[in-house]
View 1 (cartoon, protein in one colour):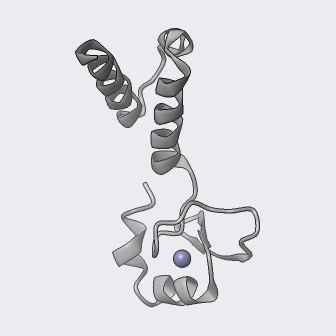
View 2: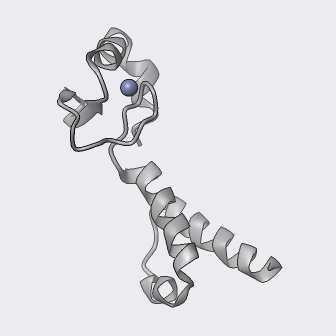
Length: 94
Ligand SMILES: [Zn+2]
């Protein structure tokens, strides 16, 4: 159990650095570990609504472009909040 946690931590740490060339190791880990890593990767790289932290869903239609990045919002309310203070929320995007 302890060893599993250590491997998990190491994998997440690698992903966090954006430096994950060792995909060989990832394919050999149990499915549960892959699930955690992909969830973590989504948080780091996937589009989110930076105002309410929701993961982007295909139904979303509200977005804006900030520093050449498309930023998606779950609702017009979040989009308005972002546009009112983009610097406050933009730090969550990367
Ligand atoms: Zn939202």
